[in-house]
Length: 322
Ligand SMILES: [Zn+2]
Image 1 (cartoon, rainbow, N blue to C red):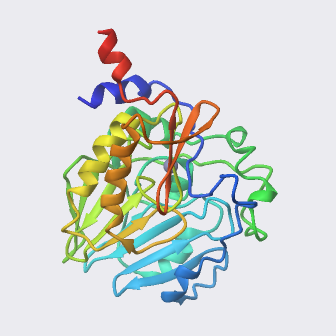
Image 2: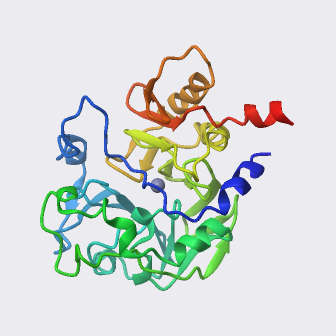
């Protein structure tokens, strides 16, 4: 039943206000106040000679590639199997990600995106093999976005240090890429002695998904969970869908120990799956307090917030009107 809500937004091809981990709440003076984040210090940093990215070895066969010097604080992940490697998201196209990945593995690379917002797909153009959903929203974003869409997101005050030479404030754009193979909910991608399950979790965007690696007890959550305000208020977001997706994510609680989000911090305890589920239940409870901010409601929880539309797009009005 959630598909009717997806269909309602698929025709809108606007780039969403993307949808990241930067805390815009009033108690924080600057987006960069929490950088550097202490939680990254527990991982071994790998020197790839590309100083725009910070690369961390999370486990024997899992790396995080992190962009701490830009307000999105985007993170992508490299999962190594015995025959192939999977790149989960490709960041923003600011630095030369391909050169970094080439230093971490010689295996063939499959790129898969947790969703098609620009801060997760803009490095796709550098890679040969992209897996994606067969969805109009995904296809529209794969066409790329011109510079005009980024006049607010790629300004000098969104950077903490000078970007690499290949980046241009004047001409930055999210480049087009081609999806080579369509994947769907429930697919298992075998990297060789490492199986990754794809699970659709629409809400933040119509094409959001998570990736579950049961053997290594980790879940790549994209923007469906990170420890900061989770954005569910853009035209193409749906709280009704996210409500269902949070329950689906929770159903994997016994299979994973760690959550690997698309922004800010990583290897977070899987206990957050229950907190996220409980948060969605709180949001549909009319007596739960929230902060009104224009046409949005901000709900605050222990280590994250959820920003939804006001009124809440739970579909009640549609049901009552039918
Ligand atoms: Zn996003």
